[in-house]
Length: 188
Ligand SMILES: [Zn+2]
Ligand SMILES: [Zn+2]
Image (cartoon, rainbow, N blue to C red; front, side, top):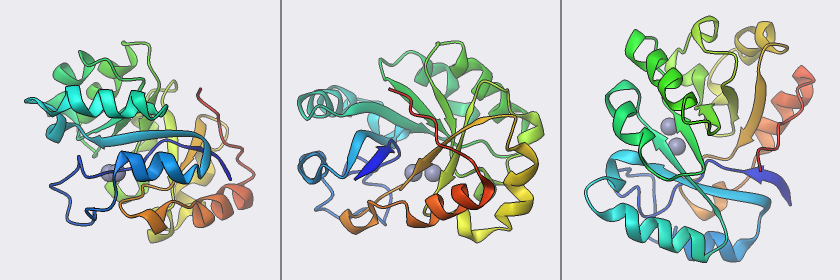
């Protein structure tokens, strides 16, 4: 069983073609693959009505309630939603770094999603953010060079970023964390 898995998508991320129709909140809750599990569907799919049902289903399943925010354009709106934590796309642009600051001001955990895949400049990320080592993307870069210099500066979480049931694993992320001697931070 995983210690923690807070970056998981479900059918609420219907705009994401990698999500399969079987990837329901109920299925994930039933698998019990992590001691602490949270759902983090794309925020743009939850605004405009779907959030209420999303929230109810996640709470009923006993999972943590998160959302994945696609950078600066959603910062204001996302800060107003009663989620437990944020997973944030931070591309290398000022509005996205400001988004991190804005969401940190809510007092909730702010996780920088797969930064190596979005060319996030970790030098510009506020110290209080958590940095994700993401099973789906971490191997797509020279992770030693990317994460290595920032080992001591941030806390880290490991994520599956699962869009399908068999993606609910962290084998690659865990290998990277072990190689870098990074221990994961348990948020809840
Ligand atoms: Zn993402
Ligand atoms: Zn994601």
